[in-house]
Image 1 (cartoon, rainbow, N blue to C red):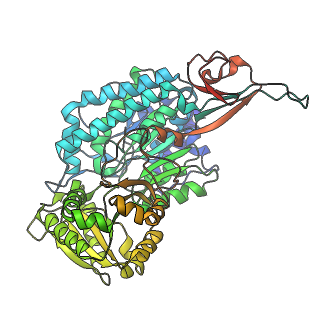
Image 2: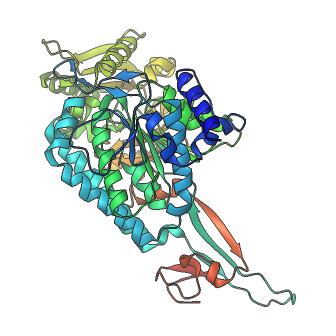
Image 3: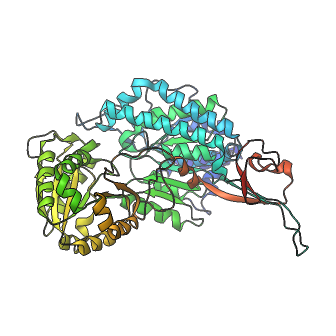
Length: 582
C-alpha cells in the first residue's frame, strides 16, 4: 500500500501545474494519498514542523501547523511607495497542498464543531494575544506591502482585534444558537406531539478570500475568519498576493493560538496564491462547504457561478462592487453647499478612495446650489495631494476605468489633480454628467475603485427617481436633507431603500462601525445574498444551518438544548423566551 501512495504522490507533484478541478470522481486520487498518516509524506513534501511563531517570513504555505512549499509558481509582494518588489519569495500552493489543507480541515471539523463555546472563545482571544505579540513588525510588514500609513495599519489592527473579541463574547452569550424547544404534550386529537428541539450548527470547512484593500480586517484573521471560527467551522484562507507577508505573520499567530488552546490540527490553513488557480480549486473542492469573498464583481461572479454549479452547490457569500449613491436634496443644499462639499472632498479622497463604501456617485437636482456645490467640491479635491494606491495593478485599473468613464458622451471632468505626483499615486477626479446621459449609458454607472466620483445633474424629481430605480444593488445609500426635504422627498427615500443595505442620513458612507446593529451587504452585486451581513456579530449566521432533534434522549442533546440548560442561555421554550430549565 505504501508504494501505491508514493506513486500517487509522484503523479500529483508532476502534474500539479495542470489545471485541476475537484469533483466526486477525481477526489479519490488526492484524498486516497492523504488519508494515510501524515508523517509518511513529510520527507517527500519537504515540510518542516512549525511549533513556534516565525520570526522571519518563510514564503511557505501553512497546511495546518506544518509549512509546505512544493509548488513551482513563485512571486513577491510589492512596495508601491518605493515602486519596487519586497525581498521575500512566496510559493503558490500546489494542487497537493490545496487538497491536503482541505482534507485536514474536513478531519478537524468533527472535533472543532463539538468544542465547547468556552474553548472556542478562548481560541479567539488567544488569536488576539498572538497578534498583539507581533507588535510593530506586523505594522511594518503591512506598510511595506500596501503603501498605507502606520496610522491606518494600527487602526485596522485595532478593528481586527475588536472583531475577534466581539465574537468570543457573542458565542458565550449563546443567542446565535437560536435554541428552540417544543416539548411533547397531549392535544385534543389524543395524538401526542413529538418533542422537537432546534439549534444552529456549523456548516463545515470554510474558504476565506483575503481582500486587497484590508490586509487585516477583511483577510487572514478578519471578520469572515473570526465569524467562521466562532460558528465552529475550520478555515482555509486564500491569502491575497498583494499582502502575502502580512498574511503569513497573522497565520503564524492563528496557528500558535490553535496549538496553545488545544484546537485540532487543520482548524486553520493559509495558502499563497499568485493568480486565480488556487481560488478556483478551493471553491470547486467537494469538502469545502462555504466561501467568504471580498473583491471585484468580475472575480466574485466567476467564483459564485463555480460554487453554484458544483455537484453539491455551496453558499458563496461575496461582497462585491458598490458606488454608494449620495442624494443631495435641494433645501439642505441651498443652505449648506460648502459644508457638504468639504465633507465629501474628504470622504472621496480618504485612503485614496480604496474603500468598498467610497461615495462614487452623487445625485442632485440641477440648480445654482448644485453648481455651487460642484464648484467648491472640485476646488477642495484639487487642493489635496494624491495618495499612494495599494499596488501598480490597482493604480492601472483606476486610471483605465477613469479614462473610460471620462470619454463617455456628456461626461465633463470638473476636477483633476494636475501637478506632478509619484508613480502609483492616484490622481483624484470629479466628473459630472446629465441625468439623461447617465440613464442612457450603463458604462457611466460603473464603479471606479479609487478617488473618483461622478456627480449626476438630474432635471427633476422624476428623473432622480428613475435613476435610483435603475441602479444596481449597493452597500450604502446616503440622504443629505433637512426636515422639509425628508418630507418632500419621502418617495425618493423609499426608492433608495430598495437598492441598498444601509441608509445614511446627513453623513458619509466611508467608515463601517463594527457593532451588532451594523449591516454590511445589500442587493446584488453589492453582495451575493442580501439577507446576510459581512460585518458584526450577525455575520456568524452565514456559517450556520438549522438542525432539529425529534424525541432525542436528553443525554444525547447538545448542551444548548438539554433540559437543565447548562449553558444558562436564553431559549424559546413552547413559544416563550426564557432562561429557565425545562
